[in-house]
Length: 570
Image (cartoon, rainbow, N blue to C red):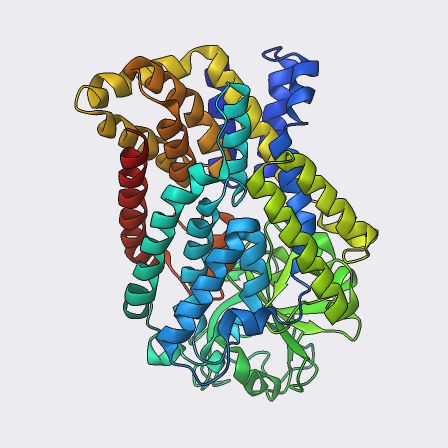
């Protein structure tokens, strides 16, 4: 039964038909309904200190995102060289990620990074995601997976402190930092055709009006094959899609023409009589056109524009959609959106004031979209309180969950994050995912699967050396995080780590930490980690970029993680 439940969860996560939150919710319900865990025990797992800490830090990060000098801190003054700018940027990201969830760090830096003026999005966004991952390993509260590992290890009697992460984490961060600063400018150099925002190619949709002179004439006769900035890719005719479009194809009433081209030259299509752009921008003045990336956990993910009633919800119309380097097919209103998709919006007058922007969209054109920046006094007070929080967390005078909850409460009481905004950004889906990961770990521990996996590792790796066994548990967590999620990978591998340490009569610290570091080594696959999805489309990355850059970063990260842990503990 446990195997069937685990396979069902894996199928739901890998299929892409269910969001991670929904897949884990179904999994938790199935565990309760089948009686594998009693209801009361399952509910007790929901109050894990790690879950309390993560949800509290999400609210705190919303306040930190309002600091008005954040872009200046990330990039410094204008006129610096590219490598100097990249070095400052990545150093700031590493420090921020050590104390703030890396998703919040990437979300706060995404807009400023796309407009910094020195580095192109291609040159800095993937390094941003990688550095946020590595920087999170400096402390036990830098990633949700590390927090869960610490909490679950404590339940087994192993207490890990900040230095347990900082010592190996510092070696990893320095190695990844140097790798990104010196290697990424060569591997991620943008081709000349991609160095300008005006060269962005998107999917656009135009409607043939009923009295259009285009009707009854072929594509060739209407000269739709001779456009300067656009290519006619498809014709949507009722429920049928005509693709590819032959030059002899006749335009019919009600046709919707699908173009791929440079959205900066959309006036070329507007100038055609009898052709009306669906949801086209009303003008080219600043602010009329906004670029946005769909956030992880957004209500848009997995739904169509028609289902969500986008125009009414956000006071904006979608002009174009892009997903990585791929071209989307079909009507705009029928495309099932995904986290990481980039939208070009024709924004209404109320768009920037909508309270639901921040939790659903990362706006690339604006700083602190939908937010009122904190005053100088408020910023100073927030930083002072955050400094006290770090002191308390590092000294372990108070439990991390309690001090995180106290800081989140203070942030709301002080008005830095109003109650309405706190309700909006509260990470319900993330809590479900973390809860489900803990439930999965309990099933693995109770089922005996951890003993079977540990026996295999001890037999084949432990017979060589303890370092080989350490590398094996690291690689086990890494493979699972590339396929599933970092939290489920960490808590699946954790019981195995304890058994291996017991069988080899070694300190469990090294194997538990290897689990945490391996679970955050998601560098190769763009769909394995939410921050990768956030930067994929704005940076115009394909799978090849992740494989080339990610493989080098992974080798540096893995080598330094395993080496430093073996030196410190074995």
